[in-house]
Amino acid sequence: MKRITTLFLFILFCGQVFAQGEEVLTPQDTSYWLKELGGGLNLNQAAFSGNWQGGGVNSIALGIYLNGRANYAKDKWSWDNTMDFIYGVVKNKNEETRKSNDRIFLDSKVGYQINDKWNYFFAVNFLSQFAPGYEFPQDAERRLISKFANPAYLTTSLGVEYKPNDEFSLRMSPFSPRWTFVTDRELYLTVPSNYGVEQGETVRTEWLAFSLMADYNKKLSENLSLMVRYQMYANYETLAFNAIDHRLDFGLTAKVSNLVNVSLTSLMIYDLDQDSKIQFSQGLALGIAFKRGNFPEKK
Image 1 (cartoon, rainbow, N blue to C red):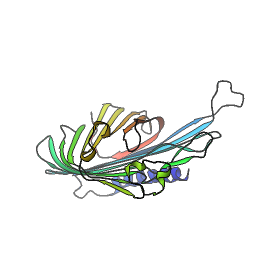
Image 2: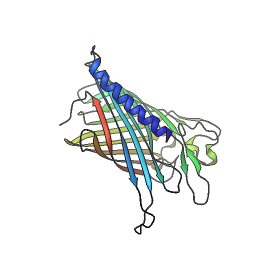
Image 3: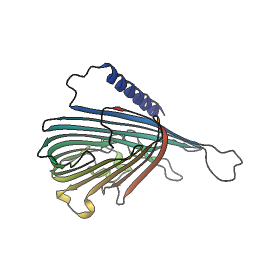
């Protein structure tokens, strides 16, 4: 719970600083920048009396998220930066506190315009999580299976981008080195695959690979927004249909009022270095939210 409290205070602090910065600072050649910072807190709770016959368990769940964008554009050059942080926990009666969500996504891309729809680009992308993750087998102690930088993925990419409008972009990179980090040298004891990193090592380097990222952000109505992000990674050295990594992020947000919204999020991952089957997570939440920025509203 200390991590939750600290992260929540950090979100409030960022929101306050960002808002004050917009009001107090005098812009000096900042017309080339578009900035946005948003975050929120979601709380879910259920309680039942001791004689409740319908079945159920007392529980409380808390989720926090922080999203940010900072984009620069001048002449033919652009620099786009994205940050997505999500963390959540759930506590059921007579059970240990468990994570319900945990995600770190950082992306930075420098582009040079070829024409009104195509760009050259170089990008750096980082994926990981904040806190330890565990398996909870029956009649056995919990087992550590992941934590911060275990695993973590740092991907660089050089290629071309197709961007016909402000809502959709498609990056294609024939040269995309990736580094997979597993800093705990004993994690293989509970995760034999060690996320593709050789046992005893902390980093796996993949130099020759192709990557693709498609990003779609659409304002469906005045109070409803959709986000879809697809990532694909294929190593030339181990190229096979079932060895290609896929990741699909989905988010649907409905604005109830200036401070309240409802969000539906999901994440699907296919990665043989993690599991031979598709992994899936989903969350539905109602909570308070804030957003500050100078991005133009999409109609």
